[in-house]
Amino acid sequence: MLSAGVAVAAEPLKVGLIVPMSGPFASTGRQVDAAVKLFLQQNGNTVAGRQVQVILKDDGGVSPDVTKRIAQELVARDRVQVLAGFGLTPLAFAAAPVATQAKVPMIVMNAATSVIVERSPYIVRTGFTLAQVTAPMAQWAAKNNIKSVVTFVSDYGPGIDAEKVFVKDFGAAGGKVVASLRAPLRNPDYAPFLARVKDAKPDAVFVFVPSGEGAAVLKQFTDRGLDKAGIRLIATGDVLDDDLMPSIGPAALGVVSSHHYSAAHPSPENKAFVAAFGKANKGLRPNFHAVGAWDGMQLLYAALKKTGGNSDGTKLVEAMKGAAWTSVRGPVSIDPATRDIVQNVYIRKAEQANGGVFNVEFDTVEKVRDPGVD
Image (cartoon, rainbow, N blue to C red; front, side):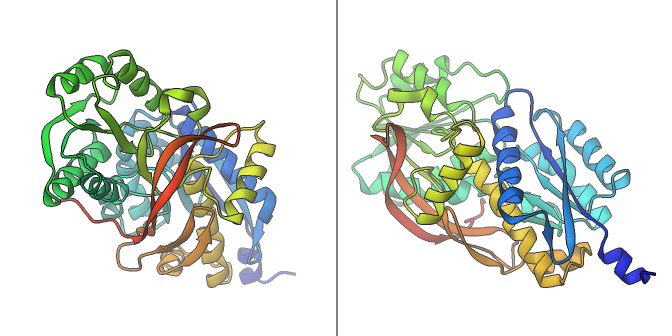
């Protein structure tokens, strides 16, 4: 007969994975789900004596109320010991109180506003922040003969973070931001905003839109003739999402962006990851959301090994603090003070490579922490 302690230790550890599998941000959910499945396939579904069961839930990506309800159901009904995923900031905000009340770790794999980690002591982030990847872009632009910029972002948390950090860092380096434009997050028409950019005649326009929207921006940028007017487009990597690069194609060529991951990252770990991901998903290219999910699972497995399979929420979060490993994106760690990710940020240029258009890295800023946003 098993003792109670052994019986508890043998119970499956349930992970509630909440991502948009439908709606305008479905590509995010598809990438996250594919990465988690590949991780389990390659690493097994048992760690430290615990079987890991992932319960996938589609929140549609647009309603915080829906995300919160799903998180509550996962905790109360399905008895999950970990929440994970979260495609956009408002959805992560909605789930944070659920994690706090239930004392359940919440691994934010995707949402990228700086303050997310402050919403619950149980949140740990394995994706990135917009401020973290924007600051190197602002600094690079100022050093590379870009003297005037219009910032153009989606009007919600990450976009506002990107705008503030770019304005601050570009200005500090001697650049001039001549205008700051914000487009609505839902059903945006970018053409009127790009017309205003063209009228302002800056050296460049700095763009952030969420994953899935980049193709529309690049098409309208070209259609409106901004490239012919001599205006450069610089961006965060969300705009040149690896998942969408095959459909964006030549319109992306020459665009310089800053981000923490590219499918063209030349490390052996990434080459193996891209090959395995494509083989398992009919040639699909992994993007930064897939890598946030992959590393979320890496972190969970490492924490479970450290706790000896104990899934107490407080102990798991403590085990995650200070964790460090070699990711497919490069070296990463979890800042023990903030529970946020520390990682390299790469400056990349969209180029023809490996039979397609890829974001080819040409400069690296090492061990970047989230700079925070005033």
